[in-house]
Length: 340
Image 1 (cartoon, one colour):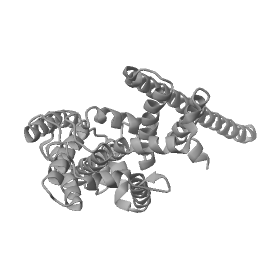
Image 2: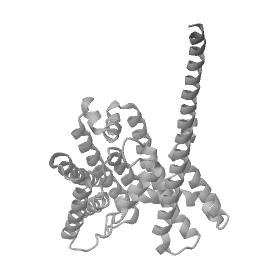
Image 3: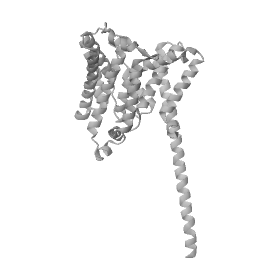
Image 4: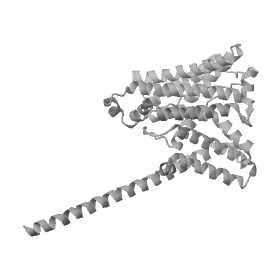
């Protein structure tokens, strides 16, 4: 229990609840169940991208192309639906697009040795350019009703997509806590050379991380297309930075080796809620990024100061124990020297 209370996830979750309660004093509509459900529903796109980004950051990497991958996957998904391909197969096309794009990133980084930031910046431009080539620069509209119906259908007032993503997160959380191979992500991020000496296939682990980032971006594209019913050229634009901010905010270290799926989920939900609260406070949308960035910086700095204070206290206690141990040792030696 103490470990949970001290975690970054708990801190951000507590601040999330406090923020909602504070805004409710100005606009009580925030506390309506339907409002809260809609906030969660609007966060699904970022949540899925952030989960994929989490695997990359855990291995001490970074992927700034996940937003472009989501956009390209959405284009393929929309084109497949408009071509008359059944919804399940169109979903597979979107997921495969994301997986292939992520694997291209992985191949360049793992096998060629290109730095992650350079490789993914390059593919960011390539994937965005491919979107325009495939669509001629125009939006994909007239999406079949099947995906729209799936997005608006609700069970117990909660959209089916929320139920589906929630189930996915729970299953992933269980699997990630029980599959031993998942520890490889932490090991590679914490100490790449040490992981190699322990017999871990470092290349395969890093390749898997970037491939998963692409796969989850493809899943995010399906959710996004279903929610708005068309595919604009700006799909996924800027989401790569928000995904990185979400995982860092949730507690995934940029130095690798730490973090959980809940880090990504809570971080993404927090950033989405900040945008929603701005609406309820009637703050112009142009302030959204500035406020979200300021909140992110404040939380990270606050958490760092707390962790540093705790670490310094632990070091001080350890030094005091060592000092007492030395005094006890000296006290025991004095009678022996007196006898001599």
